[in-house]
Length: 387
Image 1: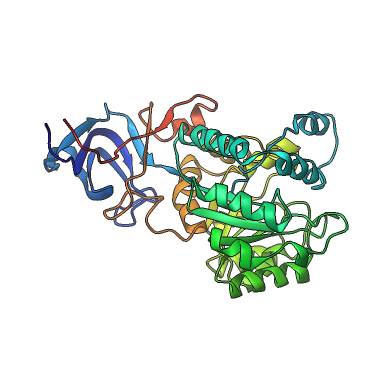
Image 2 (image 1 turned 135 degrees about the vertical axis):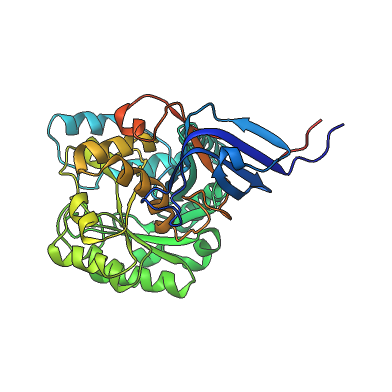
């Protein structure tokens, strides 16, 4: 019988993206590199020729290795299908948030086992494309019972769970009837609110402030859906409350950009939504040039962006939003980690959690260069017993 494997050497890396500030450029790029994983943490990074011995070895075959993608915004806990809405939008229909109620009805009607199977399949789909950290929101229950159920099921597949009771306000209901933090907070790390006065189904600035204040009092981290459908107070409210991120940011004023540049709230951009709704893309270039911290995420959901592919999002950010391939990759890794206030993922520096993605390509630039091609996959560095 073999002994316990505690360390793994990953060498033969043609190009290693570390996102480490200790390395000169923005991606912390190393060539002819190696790293050692010990007890599921990065223990050493450097030139292949200087790599220390380890219990097991993986040869990357001169391919590129990057930090696994951090998808900091998704809505995976749902049942039902809204492909007909996508077809209608392609024919000119406008999105206003109203279709969420259709998903609420289908999700409430699904059993725990049905939702669990759907969740696990969607997570597996993300992981198969190189995503290692996933945030999942509730928001398709909109009763106390169903919101708790969605959070409980999401917690089975990720620690990054978000209570989005303030997704839309159900017809005839008051938010206080289902924003039950005592019941939902134990299953969530975050609270989120859809602050969008341009939608008749979402929440205005004062309502969003009340939701965030209650979430903060319950010990939850803060997130905001804001400025998706038009100019509004979402960014200002997020900055005022020190939210970890404000997501969408499609319609921004100069004051919004300045406010984000002056704080540590991350602007999380979701270009898959603009692709699937034929909406204008956010001005990512203006945000980057102003010094705003930017993240990219899928917003995987049944209504406005049913993609689980972070490589696709990276390609859109480069093609449609003016980011360089390096900026887009950093936003999809270190940016997503910042949006979740995680220091252990999104980079491959010493001490990081060993979540890395190998590309069937010589360079990270192929993520945007070869859109739609499945070149990214998680590298399994799980410590296990041999023999």
